[in-house]
Length: 247
Image 1 (tube, helix red, strand yellow):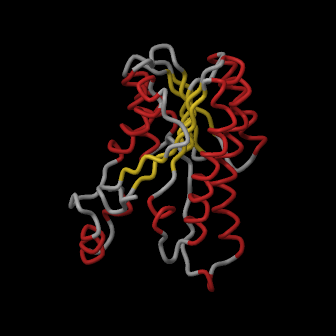
Image 2 (cartoon, rainbow, N blue to C red):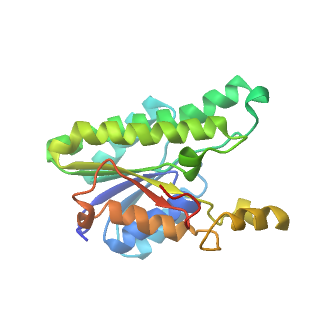
């Protein structure tokens, strides 16, 4: 799939979907940078990458802070000399109805999810343009396509990511850089495991395949879009949602 010798930079990769993406890329032959605002788990994920026979680098990174992103990218370039793949996975939620939503909760979600994607993308593009190769995969969401009450800030941020994906894809296509997005549906996580049975049942009723997705489902989709097998795909949103939203 063209991953041997590639360097992948995955944000929000200390746990969950980000960790699964990091390990899937390592399995395919990438050296992987584990970047997260939470420093407690990045070393353990980096060791998992190394156990697969690949090199790794664990860095504390706040995607909402452009200076933190700039410093993090500098560390990656010092260690590996290049960045071939960027996966913008870092994200947060601060749910609430619009009429009760605090302005700071609106701003924080947009700053981390959307601004963070912009900062990381901007930081890696110069090197990708120079080497005339790059793969950028942004993590959006099914709610950006279908909407979801109580998540206006999150939906707006993920909808913005879809628009950003298409704009950047058009800007850098001539430099052999592809930019795509993955839109996960309901994914089984530690959080969804704690939901009441009636809520889980209602969620499952919306999914034609009849099950929650897994972090591995998302990781495999990301890995495909980052591979040479997807070299003629750019500006695309890959829906991985079990059929709950079809467009």
